[in-house]
Image (cartoon, rainbow, N blue to C red):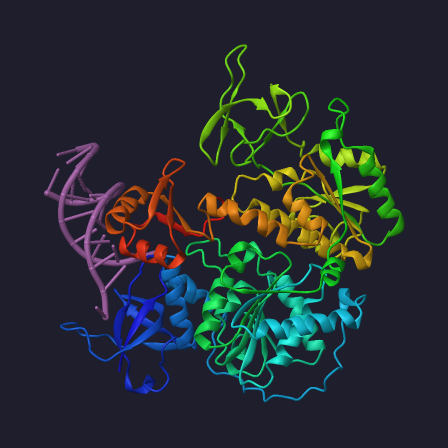
Length: 609
DNA sequence: CGGACAAGCTGA
DNA sequence: CAGCTTGTCCGG
């Protein structure tokens, strides 16, 4: 037997043929991790194919050793598809699909145990929900599962466990296992724990890789679990499918929700995407199932707007109403903290009119304008729109020509300002640090970047100190990402049922993202966003890729010769934005340009555009 | 990636 | 021209 082996060596992007010796003949299969001698080195690699015709005039070396079991053949194939779809190498996908530690043999498969119906406990933060909502979620889940590909819109604070259990139960008649993806490792751990306590056998990925492969368990994990070795699937569920964390940040920049759809399609099983705020990309080509208006409303927190245009520009700091709201929340719920969320550090500054303090935005597309150069003495500055690439003089929509002022919260000052304003202890928390024993600091008010929303499990109030940085971020998905933040905040405070509140300080109180959250109707953002995307020819109307790095120039030149369906736009120095009519056309076009030279980065579905 | 080997540079 | 660096090629 002869096999093709892909070495686990980062610089090598091709396979080599090896001979399988007699003693390994029964055990070496596609997906296995083997050791081979390559160029005098002993390296690991994956068996990616069995070959019937040996390459001519090469005396083959033998496979030295079987190192570990690896992804099943169907996952090797899925990895190949993803490498094509995201114009990258297969190796990173096989790394993600492989067990974290060596696996020599699989544990026994679990036989299915019948669980008595109706005994499920609703645990943890879901305790305040009554049974009516769970029944509505279960019915919607069953309805969604009747389509091969659907989006279930569940409000942020709704018990996602109800949807997972309903899906498990509804597909009980079929053979195989349910695969559930969660947006973060922490979420996956929590979900696995709750499912186990409800009596299910669970294989948490990646550590229970072998258990997932042997079958009979619900397979739960974060992004990479979409490549877990489930031999027989009966459904795939992606929770919080809108989350950015589902996209791999290194190239190839594959998206777990996209792979989940393809995996389910190949297995002929339903793929259910669950999200409080489905993006246009998720909705494209899928059936949308929603709850009743009442049920959806109950899962979003009430949003309170603070119009920053009303603030006295000379007073500085935050308005007193903010202090009132924070003190009230601390007073009524002293055991849950107040979270104050600051926009990410180092983001672009916004410009506001020096007179009326309203933001200076592009007349054509609404993007925040930036000031690239200092104006000449006595002249009004020229402002630049990063999206339209046009330059306009500084003119305020309501007061005419104006001298712009930079709006940026003094990052270091915010904590002191809030402490002075509220008279409460305010602690600053970052992505990791602070707090004894890795927990959150024990202060009634916590300030940090959006990471605080991921780190705190519960809060009485979430305050977005300057939401305009999210609303107007120079990325086409800014609106969707901003709504996702409001959804996350709604979940952390527990929606309407837990009397949680979300306060948003903004100069754009009529923005459709805020309207969507205020009305607990994410569809409002979709309606507003759809025509804009079509007009500006952005996804899902088109598919994008960003080519950068050393070989970008050369690669893009070859691409333009090889394929006429794509459109190449240069943007920042050395970066090229590639636009194609769809993701398949994009992948084919990029593949037709041949192998990019080392140092060329191809980011399919770029996030920062 | 990392070893092999060739071409290029330096100093006596 | 030995001895070293730098660059390019290629792997079964």
